[in-house]
Image 1 (spheres, rainbow, N blue to C red):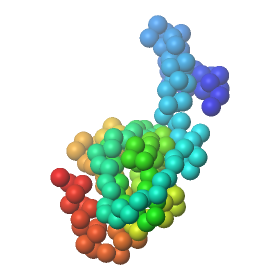
Image 2 (cartoon, rainbow, N blue to C red):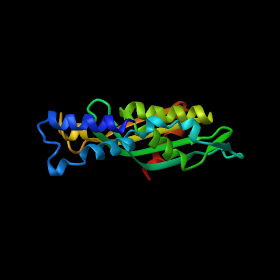
Image 3 (spheres, one colour):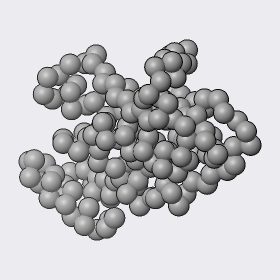
Amino acid sequence: MEDDKVKKLTTELLKTIGEDPKREGLIGTPERVAKSYKKLFGGYHEDPKKLIKVFDNEGYDEMIIAKDIDFYSTCEHHMLPFFGKAYIGYIPGDKIIGLSKLPRLVEIFSRRLQNQERLTKQIADTLSDMLRPRGVGVVMVAEHLCMKARGVEKQNCTISTSSFIGLFKKNINTRSEFLTLIKG
């Protein structure tokens, strides 16, 4: 990301909305925005397939779940935040992933301009491609500032999305087990 370009554009944006970028409270804002954008959109510079190692599963054949994974993303339609919890489960084939890498997948894809539906599917598809598991389930529950602060202005609305692959899609008992376990 080009810091100087972000700073210049931020200064122009401040002027466009009627602000004085030289006002005391705004001095340094272009620099802070540039620094913030590096974090908020850092997922564009990370390839999960290069960062995440897989291991032999050593015979484990039951469901593995990571739940209550906090995430923060930015809506591609309004460039406003959405945030919530991700829940990931899979039943391994021959390979497993390091447990800390499940939240890492969420982080990589959430740090891009997104819509929640695509974000959910990207996580499921990447895990499926990398591990070739018997099944994958991803559920994401989020609050969208674009719905709270503008538009319909509904403060208590949450959005849930899911993506199921393999046994999680084909077998209702597997899906039910996953959904029950992420609630508790």
